[in-house]
Figure (cartoon, helix red, strand yellow):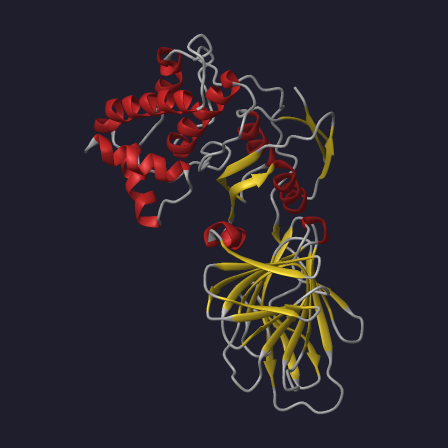
Length: 409
């Protein structure tokens, strides 16, 4: 293995640019005992280069040797691949967390965490040696706050509410000529028995904090709802347009139908499509509505302004102005695939996502951190695991019941 190849992969990893193939390649390297010495030397060299780039004074720089115990811990884990994976509380596949720091010494520490946790913690077991602690932490581990799960409430046209996570599989109800069905997979689906006449019937599916759900609409459009979201839709699309209303966040795979464009209303904006895949984030506490296109084409409009997105672009509504930019698609839709992908995400936004997924309240004591975070965290992790990793990079927490307090120290 060439040193330059390892440097290339680690640098792309830090920049959140690795392809899936490169991620697999890096995982193989980090799992190969014969590469340990080479990878350690590369990590130490990168650490020194990052410190120099940050402008650290010589008397502020941490000697490379001081990181040897940490590196030894990184490479002392069980790398056996033939056994079943450990539970999430034992094996935490964090894909790197980093912060911008004020002050060279703290910046160097953050750079080390970025490199060490960003690459090697793919395989770090959360059982550090007492002789070589990685970081001081005040967080007491707790498994009382579990991650979210498939939970939602369906409100039928007559007002009847069905708790979907408790409901049996099979037919849940009849809406006109359309059957409401809970599939064996847990997904909600609608089976039309013929053309509908008269006034449309509307259903609303709502996910609570700590919930998510998937639904197949009457036209075969697939929708993934994130936590604390709702979707209102007709039980049969009889109009010239297929119109749904969204609050919160959802990912859509729209069934093609040129004669009936698909329209998503968020209260602030409209997203019009024919057949495509896209994500809309419309949480009131997250600021402007953001529409991100993965495949196809969409037209977004608000207050007389409009824009057409191309794959890989995100449209942002802000004060009746639409702006577009190219974004990291994997970061935007990671929640649908079972993890969070932070891409220079402000701490407050990270904590809002934690609040929604773990059904907790967030309180700030002292100055709110202004830093940004880069990394990937599985949504199956316990909140104590997530917060512990964030403490390693200098953000501190206290957990009391279902309240998480962000503290200065």
